[in-house]
Amino acid sequence: MRKLTAAKVAALLVASAVLTGCAAGEPRDLSPMVTAEPPMPANATINPKIEAPGGGEDDCGDPTVSLKPQGTAIPPGSTMDKIRKRKKLVVGVDQNTFLFGFRNPTTGQLEGFDIDIAKAIAVKLLGHPSAAQFRAITSQQRIDALKNGKVDIVVRTMTINCERRKDIEFSSVYYVAGQRVLVKKTSDYDSLKDLGGKRVCATSGSTSLRNIAQSPAKPIPVAVDNWSDCLVMMQQGQVEAISTDDTILAGMAQQDPTLKVVGERFTEEPYGIGIPKENKDMVRYVNAVLDEIRGGEWQKSYNKWLKPVLGSDSPPKPKYR
Ligand code: GLU
Image (cartoon, rainbow, N blue to C red; front, top):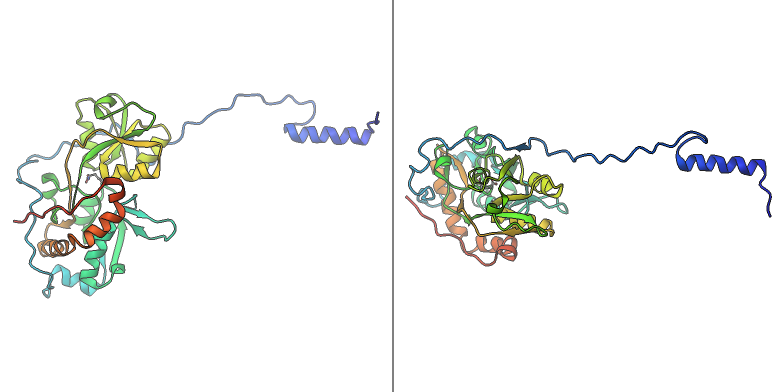
C-alpha cells in the first residue's frame, strides 16, 4: 500500500475545499435552489383598461372605399413633390413581425411583405428602394406617428376601420387578414371560446386586443408593445394564447414550431396604408402605385413571404369613391 505523505494529504484537502466551495470543516450551504419567475416584457399589462371606440364607430359606411387614383404625375407643391425634394420617403413599419416587417439577422435589413409594398412606393416616387427610410413603430404609435408628421405613410399590418378613419386616411385594401388564435401544440384549446379566464396576448392599440377583451368567453387580455413580446410571454408560460391576424400568427408559428394556429377566422382585417388626413393627393398617388403593382410585384412578394404559410391568394380588388 502506498503511504500518504503529509504534503499529499494537504493537497487533497485543498482540492476538496475547492470542489465543495468551502473551507474544510465549515458547514456546506444546502439551502434549496430558488427558481425566479421570469420578468414580463416592458409595458406588459394584464387586463388593461381598453377604451371603448369613440361614438359613431360605424357611421362611415364601408371604410375600405378609398380615393380614386389619378395617375402617378407629381404636381408642383403636392405632398409627393415635397417628398421628392427631400429625397426620402419616411415609412412607419414593424421590425418585429416575421413575414411582414422584420430584421433579417444575416443581412441586417428589414424585410417582409409590408416592406416590399413600402419599397414599391419609394421606387415609383424616388427611383430607388433605398429611398424608403424606415421608422420602427408599435401598433399603438401608428396613428400618432401620422398625425404628428413623424412619417409620410404607415405600412404596418394596419386594419382599415371607421374609428381610425376619423383620424387618418387609408389607401385601398392591399390584403385581407382575419383574427385567429395561436396556442401550444400540446394544448387542447380550439378557439377563444375555450380560453375563458386564461391570459391571451395582443399589442396595445390593435384591433386584436379589443376583440379579445370583448369576447363573450371572457379571456383575460394581456397588452404588450410588440408582437414579439407576445411570443416571449407565450414561451415563458406567462400567457396561454396569442390572438391576432392569421398573417402575424403564421409568422410566429414559423418561428416556433411548438405552436399552432387554431380555430376559424372570426374577424375581417382589411389592410391599408395609413396616410395623414390632409394629404389626399398622397392617398390618390399611393392608390395609383398599388394599382400598378397588383398582379405583378404584389404577387411576387406574396408568393415569396406568405404563400408557403397561407396558401395561394391574389390581390384584393380596390374600391374607390
Ligand atoms: N391588423 C390589426 C390592427 O391593425 C392587428 C395588427 C397590428 O396591430 O399589428 O390593429
